[in-house]
Length: 161
Image (cartoon, rainbow, N blue to C red; front, side, top):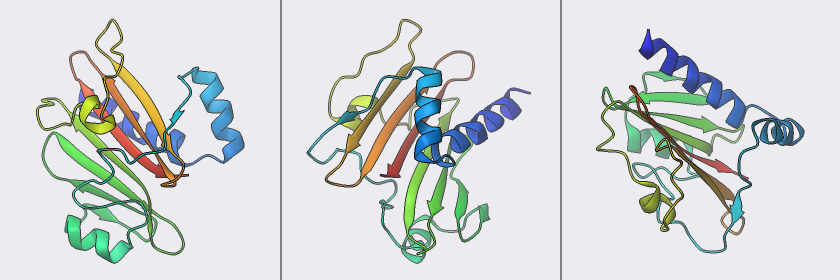
């Protein structure tokens, strides 16, 4: 039952993160009252996943990641272990527009927020973390979301702006 909840949560997060227009995204941002993203000029320490970056072609991404569990011309789902999976999203030009990496259960292989942003990140009293930083000159943003509890979860997302 817990695995089903995690799967549904990931699907819901993907829809919220990637499926809305700018207007809808503003509504969702206000509805959840998440902290505003911080625009930054430099390059983040974590700007690729397994060699896949925003803007990479579909064929290059597939060559780096191997066979997807599910694939189409717009989205692919990869499972690397019981604790690590990723979704890659493509636009009409067949280039990467977003990457979502999910770590569940044992989080040893997951990067820390410090490794993702290169700076300390505020930890909530329950141990959870949420931070989003925009990199306008690079044309994408990165978010880090850690949920603690019996089934801990870390989701790292990168998306073209």
